[in-house]
Length: 390
Image (cartoon, rainbow, N blue to C red):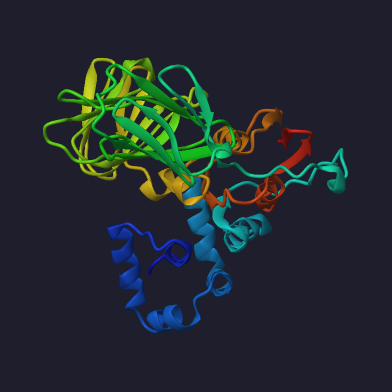
């Protein structure tokens, strides 16, 4: 019998973004073919109906759910099964959070909320990040992209830079190519942006990210440098001109035509390259790996390891969600800090327990922290500092 929480997660994925992996589609279709499940899905499915459905099934077999939760913790169930209130709260809250703009599950006992040192009415409204970045041209001049109008914003040799909403692109003319000229697109904290490189490759930059690239590609290779942060690439195919992304520390990714996500934040412990389509070669510390779709190369102290993460979660930031896949509290709060441009402090040692799921990045900070509060992660805010109470 399919696990109810697993099916609820898949239903929510399809309901919200219709972006299931092929294996997930097969899993969900197998469940839909059973009994009257397809009729329920086609006629009744909403986020609220999904919550009621999951709640009913959890109440139908508490002992089975108790065993399932202990399996999730990676610890043996006690001899005498217990289904204590906090387990139900954690699972139910995960779907309630989904109704508010994401889906989330976090495993920890409930704790009393600390006294708030500041009345809620006085807590400032801290808005989420938005499409903003600055473009540094080869001559050193800087264009603040969120303050200029759409249209042509600069010309460099044979390339004209055109802004269209939250994207810049390069178009070629008959003018001479500007050799050895590089631009840098940099997003701040609480910013994101996208661009189309001179060869047609599409790039999305997450917050606190920088990409250095030539004004025009020449010769038999295409080479860009991800200076920091996180980016998603859809590389224009070209057999004769391989595409290379150079990462901090001299690591690099070699591509022919593919889409992949790269994370190399300086405050994250490891660099990670996750392949969505195609094939890439990741090089680090003298070694290399060739990835297949769905695989991730993680660089740890000069060595590469292959993982198989939830690609949907890794690329969630492009769809407006935080990536909380196998994330501990420090990783969760680093993402929040970058997106809302806030500082984070911990009272005591942060929990190493793992959180799964996602929360919308399109809500203000108070709403995001309220989602965490529903799972007994207590915080207070003063000015632009978030204090996490352990």
